Structure formats: C-alpha cells, structure tokens
Image (cartoon, rainbow, N blue to C red; front, side, top):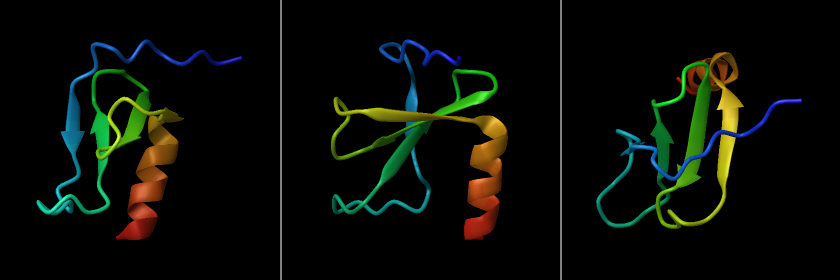
Length: 64
C-alpha cells in the first residue's frame, strides 16, 4: 500500500503551457522523489493527485 505524502509544504509550479487568463492549468511539485503531486491551479486547496514519476513521464511523453 502506498501512502500519499504530506503536501502542505510542497512548492508548486505551474505548467509552462498555462495561460495567464485563469484557463485550465495544472501545477506539479518536484519536492517528492519518485512521486509527482498534481493539482488544479484554480483550486489550490482542493484535492491533489499523486502519481509515480515514471507514470507521469509516460503521460507527458504521450501528450507531445
């Protein structure tokens, strides 16, 4: 069983593809080796999704 990390001190960065008019944006944190927390930048206090780094890399590669 995998436990989600405590994200209250995470440093978030917005996708470089995000626009400045409040569009649909995602933020990720690089603070957790092997894991990539993802959240909606419009709802920073809402839920976050935590995925393994290898799965995130595969996901991003499939979008390119």
